[in-house]
Length: 335
Image 1 (cartoon, rainbow, N blue to C red):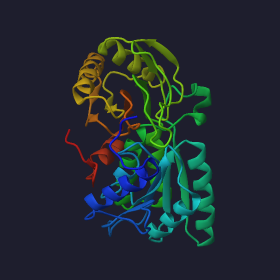
Image 2: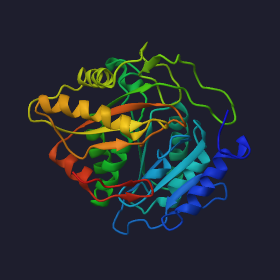
Image 3: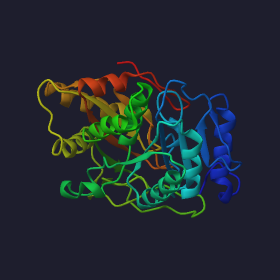
């Protein structure tokens, strides 16, 4: 294991300390371990707070989206591990403005259980909450078991829509409704070329041969749908897009946003090679791409690989996607 770090057991604490020190003008943490990250300058016009939680190791997800136009707070766990219900509860209390708190997070058992407990505690303080899980990974379960699907890079689009709706002064129920509409139109799938190493474990999370690629691999090393021989970029782009189009057919004149996301060790040049093929395929279908996202938005330590997310847009969703947002790791992109 070769990593830039001190002691493995201090990896998370020191990375969080560095993030707070680097972005102290925009982020703050009320606890010395920095397991709760809050916006230092919350919008005075927003009545509903939007929060998330999740394990470390996925930067910019999750805490990287705390800031203007997106999240009010994030509870942070160890590498690939859920934060505690207690930290989630403290975060919910810290951001509540009286209009309720919308809890938006990936569909993982630890996060779900702990958010449920945190929201139960919050109810005792008369804080209204709504929980919603992101389940965009089409490879993690068949369509008839979609409630069991994982949340991956589609989380970022969900944060964007929920944050914009909150800034638009919608009620808690309305923020949940528009986010739910978005989630029904967000589909993702990933592909891994290499594993990653959790610092305290000191070994790879899975094994894959040098000439192989895992289609559908999860961001914690969960199994994919098939292991294939390494393929040209255009073939990979077609494979990923075809899996999404099976579930979300696109018609002539539709408009989408596309995210080609690096998993931590994939050069941006490779992501753009994939994007050109996605663009050409959709252009041939007369489907327009609005605000493409190419880069690292949801990683898995130093895993090499990518994910593709397609977000089918309505006029309202398009409006909220364009809404201003500015966090330490995300700024609204031009069309």
